[in-house]
Amino acid sequence: MTAHNGEAVDEQALIARAQQGDAQALAAIVENHQRTVYNVALRMCGNPHDAEETLQETFLSAIKALPKFEGRSQLSTWLYRIASNACLMQRRRQAAGADMTSLDDGEEERDEFDPPKYFVDWSVRPDDVLLDGELRSVMEDAIAQLPEALRIVFIWRDLEGLSTAETAEVLGISEGAVKVRLHRARLQLRELLSHYYAESRAGSRTGGPADAKA
Amino acid sequence: MPKPDCRQLLAELSSYLEGEASPELCREIERHLAGCPNCQAVVDTLGKTISLYHTLPEEDVPDEARRRLWRVLHLDLPPR
Ligand SMILES: [Zn+2]
Image 1 (cartoon, each protein chain N blue to C red):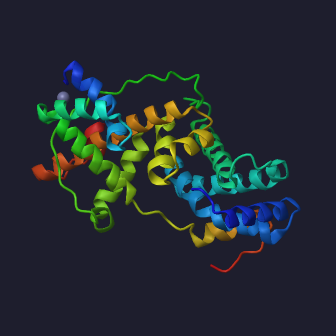
Image 2 (image 1 turned 90 degrees about the horizontal axis):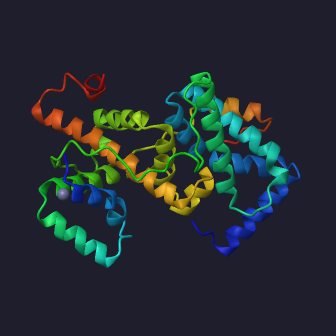
């Protein structure tokens, strides 16, 4: 994610113009990042309606805060941090105060995870995800089952491709916490996919993973 | 239920798969894997899980949502 020198200069110029309220510059910033913010919000919130609200709130807050942006981090990192907070606020509103998640390091950072239950290998082809709608929805469901604090790390690292350092900055947690949470998220997802493959191999597709966990 | 040394190994798997484990740790892990089909299956399927998710497609912002976003921000909607 290192910008070339020219790009960095362009971004600085763009930010400077946007900070003066230049509508074209603001539009360019929104246009460049709306898709990422929407997709992250969609997977954090689990539905298009809340994702849209989160998208709007992210850019409303960002435009309001932009004059205070000092360029100490990349614009994208700064924006994604606002987006992450907007996602968590949205989730909190949804939960109506119940089950508040905190992302800071004050939370227990155990190196622990549930022991694996599935030890069967399964085979995938590279284009399985694109061709198999059922697999895709199983994968999306599995993300939705992750605890929030793991889910958001997984989304930024493995789905959006941010580095460990960027993810840590976006979420305001340590790099160690990013690594531990990412690993726990991946192990949980592996468990859920293994369950799915074990079932489909046994030919009993009727009881999906969603039924099995109930 | 995995043995205690399986547990230890499982905790290191992400760094192992990302090539961040030290050569020493890699050797240790590979020695364990050679004698432990369970952990080997976990390594293989964890790698597959990660690569499956890397290909999970993303959605465009729906047209309606996009229009509403730009209206809320008081900006002119650029052509798509
Ligand atoms: Zn083992």
